[in-house]
Every structure is written in structure tokens, then in C-alpha cells.
Image (tube, rainbow over all chains, first blue to last red):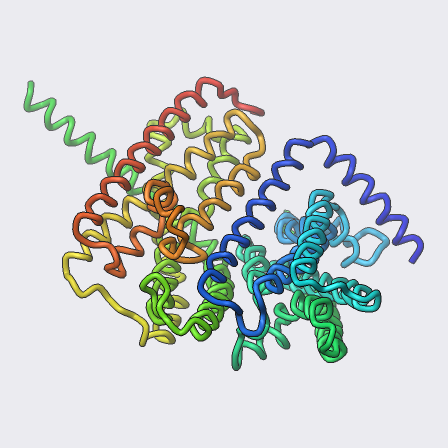
Length: 264
Length: 282
């Protein structure tokens, strides 16, 4: 375990050095994120100029939800996204061989090569959004709520990671699969919507099979709804996170057995 | 002599057509390896659409009255039309391919061949779009069957040719913007941030997320003249017959104006870029 921590420390250090040599790019990526946030706020503004609530979520609760999604997604993207997005390329070109030869766990090796500082900065922007929406809602969270919120965020990052990892692993069978990467963004597109707008079979699909709507909704509810018990939601999120993490790990090992490297 | 020249010209025109036809065929074959990619993209692309449909259902349940002339059913149909048009005309790989060809110096191989790079890219774009829509038509048709009760095909026959024209111009605007942006690779190595900044504007301002006419009135003036409106929203409005008469002709004129503008701009950036071009590597 200590060895993994040391290796990971070195990886992060390398990434930071690399990142700081492209400062303009760093700032531009932050601009992109900012534009997306503004776009989402305009969307909410337009919706709430016609209605007072979406499901049982008020406007500033929806902002809280967007901020929470931002924190979770950006932490995931900072630590894992680039690595997983490059996995199909590693598989296609056969460079995965080098990763498999390393004396560390193969999943660890392919998941932790790079680290994005700009995403972590954006995660803090998410924290600011959450704080602002809480202020607008007039909610002052208790310490235990904040602690549970943090736990739920970590579980959410786990769900983000596993779903993207599962998608990227499919590249073992499907070459040239940029569509898999877009799949991640498409699936998590709905993570920032209030859970109560979904109905019927889709509620089941997106909270059990592909548990994307739990990821931001569970922590946001923990923070905003002090009167409701958070435990049922948290247990569901924890169970879902455990299942997708385990499932995609098994899938990765299954896929590795099919890996034939790139022919030379 | 003049007869000879004429026949020579028509012969060269024919051989030139054949040349680009061949390129079109090659484009189709090359694109075929992406078929899984296309299918996955569309299948996953349905997820945001489902989210959008539920959001609007909640909105209409809660407001109980039409919003800017949209009912729940016409809102669903709006998203079906935009998803179809988006899959039909939005370039997905072209800017990345062009940028890579410039950055890695592979464009030299095209420059020395007796063909026009722009025409080559247009044939590649067309073949790519054609195969893309052929593959993704299956999930899209599935969606259409699922939501068949919301489909309101145009009632006036004259809508169809105008829709075709507007869709063609929208495709042209999208293509030339992608082409022009990719040309920036002559000056800078990494264009992905610029592509994504532009993409953010396109995403929100071309009508992907919501129909633009539900935006507040003070924005409508800007949206009326913005090029993004004419990349997707305007043809969708024609398909839904929400724009007719004088407003239709005015819109088509603005669209044509933007098409000419981006085409000329792409041309200028290309000639300027070539002057700066030094092939890297061998």
C-alpha cells in the first residue's frame, strides 16, 4: 500500500510539472468549464422563469445539485479521466503491454498515469457554487451533514470512475471506439438532473443498473434536506458504488484474458 | 479548335468528377471501420435525450400551460428533429482529422496530388455523414416509433424543399466552421481548447439544450443574427413549420449570408495558413 502511495505521489508530481509548462492551455480549459457552467445556469434560469419547482426541487436546490455534480465530476476527471480516455489508444497500439509488465496492479497502472490540476481548481469552483446555493437557501449544514456529504462525494467519484473504466475496457473488442468516451459524457449528462423527475423503468435503470442519478442527488439531499434521513440514500449509493467498482474490475480481468496485443 | 477545347473541358470535368467520386468511395470504406463507434455514440446519445424529456415533462406538469407556443408534445418533437438533424449534419471527426494532417505534416501528401484539398475534405465529410446516418438511422427510427404519437410532419408540401435547402446550408455553415477552426493548426499546435470553446457556444446557442425561442426577449435580437442559430435551430423551426412567410425568407437570407461568410473566411485562413506552412518531419 505504501509503495502504491509513493508511486502515485511521483505520478502526480510529474503531471504537475508537465501541466505548468502549458499555462495558456491550463487557463483555456478553465474557461471552457466556466462557459459550460454559465450555459447550465442559463438553462436553469430559463426553466425556472416558467415554473417554481422541478419535481420537488426548487431553483437553488437545482443549483446545489449542479455544484455537487461539478465537484464529483471534476475530482474524477482530475484524477482519472485522461488516463481512462487514453486506454482505448493503449489497447489499439499495443502500448498496454508495457503497463501490464509493470510490477503493480494493472488497473492501478492504467488509471493513475496523469493528473489534471485544472479539474481540481474547477472542483473548488463547484464548492463555491454549493456554498452560494446553501446561502440562498438559508441552510447552514451541521458538521455531520458535511461529513456525510464528503463521503457521498467519494462514493460518487467511485461510480464515475467505474462506469468510465467499464466503457474504456470495451475497447478490447471494439477498435476505434471514440464513441465509448463520448458515452461517459452522455451517460453523466443526466447526473445533474433532480432524481424525482425520472419515472418508471428509467428510474430503475439510472439508479440501479447505471446508477448515475444517485451520484449528485444523494449528497445534495444530504446537505439540503436536514429533516430527511440521509441513510437510505447513502446506503443505496454505497451499494451501487460497491457493485459497479467490483463489476468493472471483474470485467477488466475478463477483458485482459482476451487481450492479444497489437500485431506487429 | 473550339470544339476540341470544349470536348477537352467536358472530358476533364468528367474525369475530375470521377476523381472526387472515387475519393467519396474511399471515404466510405475508411469510415466503415467506425461503424461500432457510430452506433455506440447514438445509443449513448439517447441518454441525454431521455433526461431532457423527463425534465420537460416535469416542467409542463408543473406549469400546466404552453411555453412560448410549445406544448409537451411539440417539445418532444422538437428534440427528435434536432437529434436527427444533428446526427445528419454535424461534423464529428473532420476538424480533428484536418488538424492532425496539418500538425503531423501529412497534408503535404495532399498538396502535391492533382486535387483540391477543400473538395477532398468536402467529399470526406459527405461520405462520413452518409455512412453515419445510415448506421444511426436504426436507433433513431426506434426512437421515432417509441414517440410516434408526438410526430407532426409538415402539412405544407412546400416545407420539404425549403427544409432541404436550409439543412444543406446549415451543413455548409457547420462544415466551414469546423474546417476554418482546424486551419488554425497552421499557427498553433493544439487546437482542442479552441474547438471546445466554440463547441460550448454551439451547444447552447444552436438549440441543442432548449429551443431558442423560449429564451428571454432581450436575447432574441442577438439570436436572430447569431450564426449558431442557423446551424441547427433554424432548420428545425422550418421542419416544425414554426417559421413561415416573410420571416422564413429573411431567415434563409441570413443563413445564406453566414454560409458565404464562413466559406470565404475558411478560404482566407487556408491561403494564409499555407503561406506559413512548413512541413514538420519528413
